[in-house]
Length: 167
Image 1 (tube, one colour):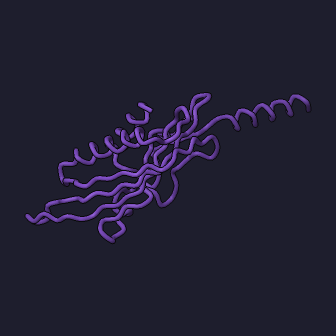
Image 2 (cartoon, rainbow, N blue to C red; image 1 turned 180 degrees about the vertical axis):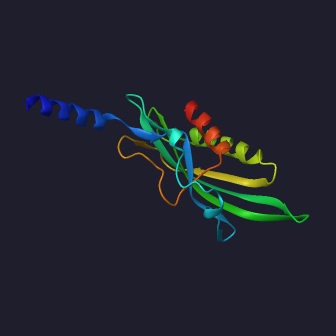
Image 3 (tube, rainbow, N blue to C red; image 1 turned 60 degrees about the vertical axis):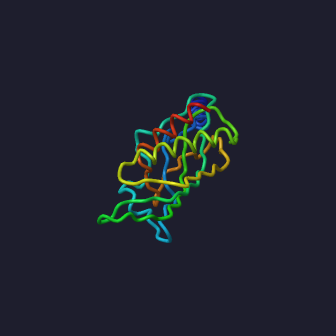
């Protein structure tokens, strides 16, 4: 009986110290064009890709932050340029050392996201702005993905992951 108790205690300790994270995943929680909610049009995916789920290394946290973006997007529709205000909120998570959000780190995220959206051949963007929320260095219940959230395009995830590694 003592052996079973010891095994259960060790298992519980192991579970409590492991930090699960969708590392390198960024998901939209809101996406509007003008006054129209466009979240459902982004993707058929409703959660982070399973390949991004990992256990963070010992001493790492699942750094989770909310990014609020806005821009003017221009697309050509039947030969006419149409411009719309775009507003979006995304949640991004990545395993790594815990950090506090600073203006310098936010500027890196902003530059990366702006570069990613400007790589789009079908639309042009102006007046891009990004506000960074505080970083939550999560160590418990850190999985951001869930019903009603859609996966952000892969380009954004790659840029955000590269920026996060600079932090």
